[in-house]
Image (tube, rainbow, N blue to C red; front, side, top):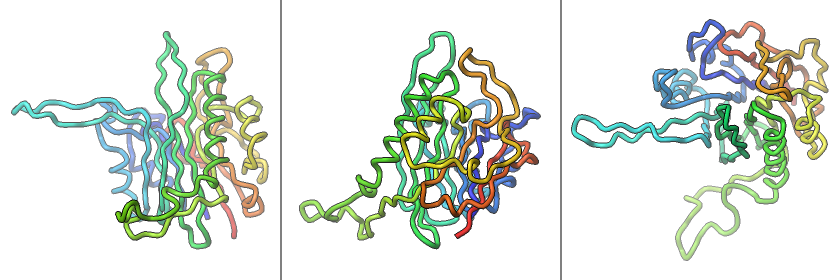
Length: 285
């Protein structure tokens, strides 16, 4: 199984050209793909519905898109009728296997009067692989400060820890007063086995990274494979004094039962569709 995590910066490469075709070509063939910074209805990307276009460019995948940033982008036509449109920015999971269920979680947000900040989110998906069902999380943390990111990663850990106890998208009896709420489907489970991917906007020595490792059974795939090059970001950001992000900020974690399956982790240095590089994890059975 090949897993890819890639902050695509809405398809804008280092050449400043927005091109989702090259994004899709760089991830095509992987089994599970987690994309961050996918958007709908933004002027800078010609108001393209990027989740829809990505799904069309990669029609062999099951897909889920989740966004907590959701604001009005509606217009009125010549007849005065409202054309309802939304402006969204979020994360997308693509899978070679069916996505049985998914949930989108809002992340904590701090207001900065002098800096742009937006609502962030992460998506949980239950995927039925050939061997067994697994949970996959696609996470994108804020970029402005460690305090905000620490609050956010605590939410991720909470969701990760409690999900198996909550069971699936529904649980218990399938009917309410004679109405079948299961649509005559089996209840999708909530397995213990999990993969957590995303742009954490923090390095391994940060407090938020250490909180994640210290309060869950998750293991960083990099720690298992010990790669030579840890740089996943192509630029240095100096947003605030406590956030000077460079190098390894994109991570793939696995639950303890998957550690022995991790074979190799690599950075796709050939990909040029974003200001990040795709991180690839190869796993055996």
